[in-house]
Image 1 (cartoon, rainbow, N blue to C red):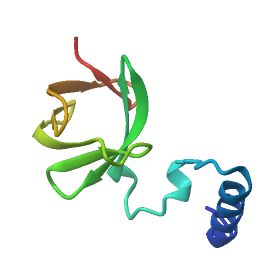
Image 2: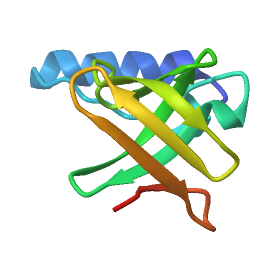
Image 3: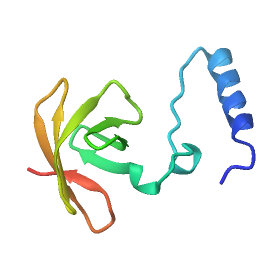
Image 4: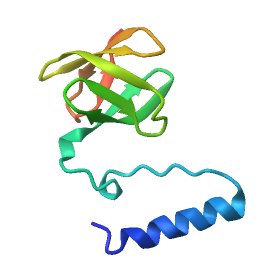
Amino acid sequence: MLKNPKFYFIVLCILVVLTGTALFVVEKQKMNLPQDDTILTFQHPNWTDDMILEGENRIYRASMPSETASIVEKTGNSFTLAWDNWGTETFIKQPDGTYILQK
Protein backbone atom coordinates (compact mmCIF):
# COMPACT_ATOMS: atom_id res chain seq x y z
CA MET A 1 0.00 0.00 0.00
CA LEU A 2 1.18 3.52 -0.67
CA LYS A 3 2.49 5.42 2.30
CA ASN A 4 1.30 8.76 0.97
CA PRO A 5 -1.07 8.55 -2.03
CA LYS A 6 -1.56 12.33 -2.04
CA PHE A 7 2.16 12.75 -2.78
CA TYR A 8 1.88 10.56 -5.90
CA PHE A 9 -1.20 12.45 -7.03
CA ILE A 10 0.60 15.80 -6.65
CA VAL A 11 3.64 14.51 -8.56
CA LEU A 12 1.35 13.23 -11.34
CA CYS A 13 -0.42 16.62 -11.54
CA ILE A 14 2.93 18.44 -11.78
CA LEU A 15 4.01 16.10 -14.61
CA VAL A 16 0.78 16.78 -16.47
CA VAL A 17 1.24 20.55 -16.13
CA LEU A 18 4.92 20.49 -17.13
CA THR A 19 4.54 18.16 -20.09
CA GLY A 20 1.08 19.20 -21.21
CA THR A 21 0.24 15.52 -21.50
CA ALA A 22 -2.44 13.71 -19.57
CA LEU A 23 -1.02 10.58 -18.02
CA PHE A 24 -3.22 7.70 -17.00
CA VAL A 25 -1.57 5.39 -14.49
CA VAL A 26 -3.86 2.65 -13.33
CA GLU A 27 -2.45 0.27 -10.78
CA LYS A 28 -4.66 -1.86 -8.59
CA GLN A 29 -2.84 -0.95 -5.39
CA LYS A 30 -3.13 2.79 -6.12
CA MET A 31 -6.86 2.90 -6.86
CA ASN A 32 -7.95 2.48 -3.23
CA LEU A 33 -11.12 0.56 -4.10
CA PRO A 34 -12.95 -1.34 -1.38
CA GLN A 35 -12.49 -4.89 -2.74
CA ASP A 36 -9.97 -6.54 -5.04
CA ASP A 37 -12.76 -8.16 -7.05
CA THR A 38 -14.03 -4.75 -8.20
CA ILE A 39 -11.11 -4.57 -10.68
CA LEU A 40 -10.68 -7.27 -13.33
CA THR A 41 -8.25 -7.50 -16.24
CA PHE A 42 -9.81 -8.01 -19.67
CA GLN A 43 -8.02 -8.81 -22.94
CA HIS A 44 -9.53 -7.97 -26.31
CA PRO A 45 -7.74 -8.29 -29.69
CA ASN A 46 -7.53 -4.48 -29.81
CA TRP A 47 -6.72 -3.71 -26.17
CA THR A 48 -5.90 -4.99 -22.67
CA ASP A 49 -7.24 -3.04 -19.73
CA ASP A 50 -8.41 -3.22 -16.16
CA MET A 51 -12.18 -3.10 -15.97
CA ILE A 52 -13.91 -1.56 -12.98
CA LEU A 53 -17.21 -2.97 -11.76
CA GLU A 54 -19.73 -0.30 -10.89
CA GLY A 55 -22.63 -1.70 -8.94
CA GLU A 56 -24.25 -4.96 -9.98
CA ASN A 57 -24.62 -4.45 -13.72
CA ARG A 58 -22.19 -1.79 -15.02
CA ILE A 59 -18.51 -1.96 -15.92
CA TYR A 60 -16.03 0.44 -17.55
CA ARG A 61 -12.44 0.50 -18.80
CA ALA A 62 -10.01 2.05 -16.31
CA SER A 63 -7.92 3.80 -18.96
CA MET A 64 -10.97 4.96 -20.94
CA PRO A 65 -13.85 5.56 -18.50
CA SER A 66 -16.11 6.58 -21.38
CA GLU A 67 -16.00 2.96 -22.64
CA THR A 68 -18.85 1.54 -20.59
CA ALA A 69 -21.00 -1.55 -20.76
CA SER A 70 -23.92 -3.25 -19.10
CA ILE A 71 -23.29 -6.70 -17.72
CA VAL A 72 -25.80 -8.91 -19.52
CA GLU A 73 -24.68 -12.14 -17.88
CA LYS A 74 -22.11 -12.91 -15.20
CA THR A 75 -21.07 -16.42 -14.23
CA GLY A 76 -18.12 -17.74 -12.26
CA ASN A 77 -16.19 -18.10 -15.52
CA SER A 78 -17.48 -15.42 -17.87
CA PHE A 79 -18.90 -11.96 -18.43
CA THR A 80 -21.19 -11.05 -21.31
CA LEU A 81 -21.05 -7.29 -21.87
CA ALA A 82 -23.37 -5.09 -23.93
CA TRP A 83 -21.15 -2.13 -24.75
CA ASP A 84 -22.86 1.26 -24.88
CA ASN A 85 -21.05 2.16 -28.12
CA TRP A 86 -20.30 -1.32 -29.51
CA GLY A 87 -21.93 -4.72 -29.69
CA THR A 88 -22.26 -7.55 -27.21
CA GLU A 89 -19.17 -9.60 -26.33
CA THR A 90 -18.42 -12.49 -24.00
CA PHE A 91 -15.15 -12.73 -22.07
CA ILE A 92 -13.99 -16.05 -20.58
CA LYS A 93 -11.94 -16.30 -17.38
CA GLN A 94 -8.46 -17.78 -17.77
CA PRO A 95 -6.47 -19.69 -15.11
CA ASP A 96 -4.48 -16.51 -14.30
CA GLY A 97 -7.71 -14.59 -13.59
CA THR A 98 -7.68 -12.55 -16.82
CA TYR A 99 -10.84 -12.47 -18.95
CA ILE A 100 -10.21 -13.00 -22.69
CA LEU A 101 -12.68 -12.28 -25.49
CA GLN A 102 -14.43 -15.44 -26.65
CA LYS A 103 -14.00 -15.98 -30.38
